[in-house]
Length: 318
Length: 222
Image (cartoon, rainbow over all chains, first blue to last red):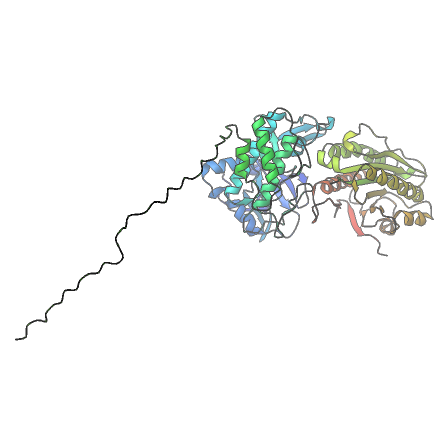
């Protein structure tokens, strides 16, 4: 049974089970029966843009297969709309894979990014924050995921400490709330929400765009590497131990650049390079351009050619 | 930038009529409130939680705390009558002190939110003056009050106590279940307040619209 053909499911055909959680805009339910590998997000607000949701559902199908696999392994992507009569009530998405779950005393808890931003507490159960190299792996994967999304002109919008999950081994990231993603120039499914401390001071009045995402990616990468919940560009990053000097220097430089005006912030590709294992080769400045000496020049023919005219006699008259 | 914090006060009736299932239900929900809020790093960092109980008198059972730092809290125990005067007087004095202390620590303090839970009509008639002192418009830290009623309380009382929204148990759930729903709505409100931004990018109180087992009633217009 494939969910990637973009067709809608009818609410009446689903066996909706227990509620798994509830947010401001929707509630997530378990499913029983043939769709048990998926969960159903039900919208609790009436103003859902069904066309925008249909476009998101079609995104993976329009990608080359290697990119589609990368996307679906790293994002709870909306795979099919759920409709009731003419009304869009929600959508199906994959369950969050097991490596992204931790265990607290009272039960399972998602390994949200926020656990990498604070000192650990006993209440966190088996969710143990990563060391420097582990954090670097998470930052790399997050930057690569943004690069993939941005290359398809997809704006995440609400980047925050709660909607990116991480797994310790193997290191991996998983993006939640993907129905808040929109393509540049298109309307979102719902107004894109914001999270305190994760706001872009230069966000346009029309809502988040790629440039906003770039700013928030700078926050994400640097806050994870500094274990800080509220560090902002312009402030001096203080990194956790165990990071390569080159990475620290590059991240600090890119982070400072994220304070620049819109359009001049480092993009996802620059973040991928800053965090990359392979490093960069510093190239020395090029020598100054040599100008040839100004010598007298030989004439290259003088002006338009004056051709003589051959006068022809009129033909003989007989 | 100084960090914003949003203080929450759970003010809970423990008069004699709460004995048995209601008190047990609240005592059972306290560890859950602790887990869900204290185990959520950002929410624990941005909110503070205080537990006040009242009957003939009122007492602070848990001083305003970062729940991630708390390891135990006193349980509720039913006894005595229902003095709203005691509750509102202690609440006003506690908020006054807490807000001053948070500001002294460099925080930007948002208007406190009070979840007021009662199961009966007040046994004191003159509680209005203590209430007016708590909600005095010229007192800057006056809290937003959400009032929850079940058992013998009447709708007018809930509307009078609430400043923003009231909830009255509709009888569809037993007291233990209704209080479980109450605790869930408190947890959701705290978590959503700590993690969703308002138009200005700051934190703001996220209130429950509907609570299963309760009817939502508007606060009394003045």
